[in-house]
Length: 255
Ligand code: BTN
Image (cartoon, rainbow, N blue to C red):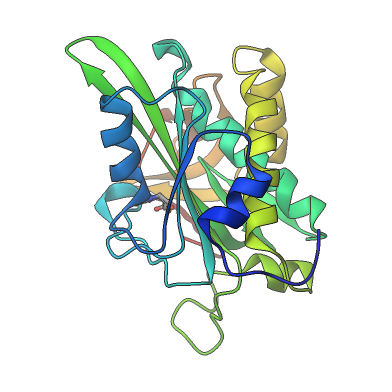
């Protein structure tokens, strides 16, 4: 992967991507554009990419910052079976994990359910969203935000967030990163129903055997199930199953 970046543009991306895509210099949220495109009949594998988001959305209704020229912000349109929706988190986290290792990052891990971290700091957030018409699944949008060269030093996020270039120790090219990431997602997607996908995701989780809290449940994260849910054993030995929520690591938290 080269160390010199041409500014992201439609023509540069067109040289590297084989899939249908839409590129925006600035957009409110790539997930919103992708959902509208999906509703209008976009094919599986289509991608929406932006250089900047002005109303990027994160998990739990939070906002997600994508200033210009610093990050990857993309949303893939996929058409899995409904039963496989929980696996989108897994395959996307695995793909970003692989990408981070490929560019030379060390200490890469996945914080349940889908934050990719480098040395315990978040480098990527994922926002999968399904689009239904009554009880028919039209498809899903897999939103991916990766910090590439945001400088978190001396900001309130410095203990919790990191950029891929800091992990890799060199300049990276965002168009090349996007092409490599889409390639990895397509590869993991082919295994969406295979047991290996879950096994790989589980083996890369850094959350197991840690003291954690979600809402008013706290205890030790003891296991994950194949639907992606987390089992927490509380002080009294009672086991709680959770499939969402903001996980706090009680020792050191990367939010
Ligand atoms: C999180 O809260 O960790 C998830 C963040 C997901 C951000 C990405 S950036 C591309 C896509 N478009 C959005 O509005 N959100 C997702």
